[in-house]
Image 1 (tube, rainbow, N blue to C red):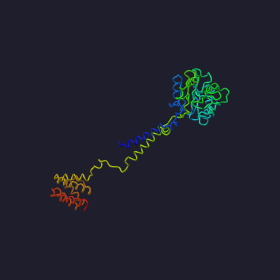
Image 2: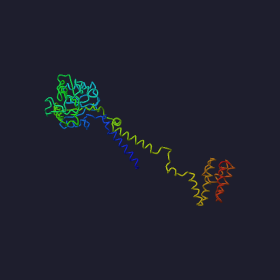
Image 3: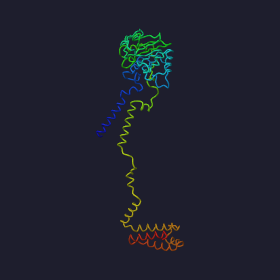
Image 4: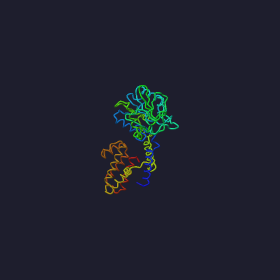
Length: 381
């Protein structure tokens, strides 16, 4: 392969990998961010596997026709959703908590930027960034609620805090006036609201006492109880199709780009379509005239003039019989007698020609004259 072609192929491969792995595209892929599918620093795959190792029945809420909390779940974990909650979805979660569910809700994007903002509002909680951060870093634990195992400080990794007008809300970590984590009894259930997403992520779970805080939250689920991660609001809404994978993921764009470049290369370097080229076997096929010429040449070189003369005599009689409506299988005498009853003059000429053809011709020219005369008699000339 030529050196320039190798260079071109290498450039295309590098461009395809850049499109697939480039950081500018990662945020638009389902499962990125704080998803339990994501293994990056801001993902929550480590938390999912850790809870699973603790013996809980861990599941993901995904690929559903519509969002609805699992009625069998003891805990619902919502971590920095990339898809914004609707009012009806937030109300469904509040109703599920009121019936006895435990919600662990964490996000660090306030206002319209946060997909969980409607869910915070459903419990009268607001996520905001204060002008001056009153919460120290790491944020101290304020209540003995996180004592089994003991948690003393939480590494937040974000300047956001919470505020609420509810009198039954309990600050659990951070500053009392601007807590980082709130505990809120709601009906028969309970809500853990966190303005810090970092403690739940792959990169922050093992920092400070973050893991101890999360484990204390999970204590509200019975041993072996069902714990559900909300992946519906991380883009896992419906089963992906081939079209969605090709048009909606970086690897799909890379495959389409590579296929387009390959098609363009083949179009510019390939051979154009044109007239059909006959096969060599078809062009080598001989014509019937060439066959006749070759057979005549063989007979001439073999000196078989008498065979040709006998052939022309039989052909003449057959043609004359067809033209006169007689049988060519009659002997010469009967044939000429029957022909004389129809065309006496033609019968006399035919008798003379058949007699001449019965004797050996003196030369090729003499044979050709006999054949020409036979044509005249048959044609009525």
